Length: 270
Image (cartoon, helix red, strand yellow):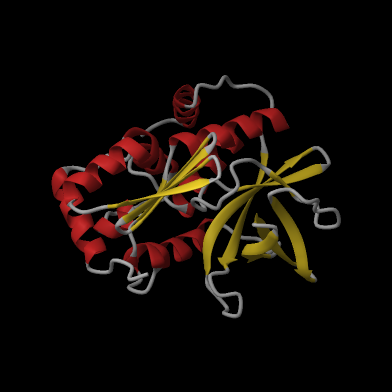
């Protein structure tokens, strides 16, 4: 078992940061380095892996074995890191708004961080559209940045992203108290339920400085300098190479073959 201090020190060494007192600057650097180094991915749900949420397992899966992860994994690990550094953190669950009219389940996890009199939303587990920096939580004065938090109804907040000049809601949440048991329920649905998105789709994304890489099934999209490049995945060898080269995700050839076969069975038609 990895001790908490050992896990924290090994994480900081990986992201090339030194421990220091909590500050907005440190929080920004941690979030930036995390989304650069540790990709969002559905490798585990696709392959039917056991995906325990204890800190040691998360660290091993995400940092050591380079398997990527999604919100319950990525934000779960970062929650422990921030807590270990002395940040005041709160676990929050949200409903992803694929269809704003639907009442979606609580299948997204993120973290609120309090720094003095300011509060920030931190989310390193949403994928290509996720914020690569802490988003200031001030619904009364949301500003006009690339992300903002709006109170749509009393006590119900939305994280919104600016897409071509129009703000679009990514997910909605409230300030109900949540705990690890709630995460286990949402996590079980997300990686085991036959209708869950990550069970039915191979996804991976990585947010670099000036470039966003996003894989969905057999199509890779790379966004950089205002341009979008598409790459079609045609076989398992190419898939394995792209996962390694573009996302730093490690799968063996047999796993790549399984992932390709699953994705090929539901390749998007559009």
